[in-house]
Image (cartoon, rainbow, N blue to C red):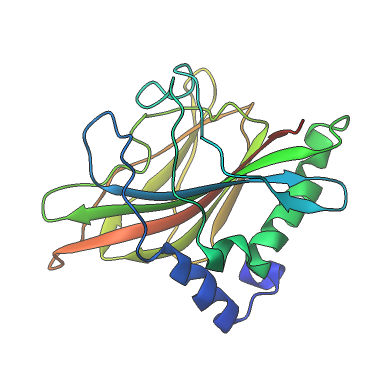
Length: 213
């Protein structure tokens, strides 16, 4: 992915630094304090990519049985992420790749999420606390930004009927998954502090694409 995005190491360090000092996700219905999060929305036209003014993130209870059903207001994307060449190239790449999935769509709504999942001591962090799910969009993208001092975090893909499709662990920054959200379910297993480490974290960028207005 780094090569495809044309990112050099200085670009990547600045981009990845946008996951530091993130605020806690205060909407966790399980009472967990293991997730930090930022959020932003972009309008993706045939030529232009335009940031959308701040707005809440909403998922139905059908798509997120833990935290869905309410408007959730998150801190905006870090400036090192929102204005980066890397994010712009990711959005352009997804626009090109996902166009055949919906040929009549003229523009897309891209929701961009910065996640940091933390684990400390015996307390695990849950990348997908809602369990196996769909995001309720057309397609999605998930890329590992950093993984430090944790075990676990296995990405699993399933058919809508519950059949297992694949399992893999992203370990190298830049590893990414492109997926058709209409055709599969996904989840990620908990992360725990690695042996002889008091705590660690897993940083991920997630982008979802749905038809725009």
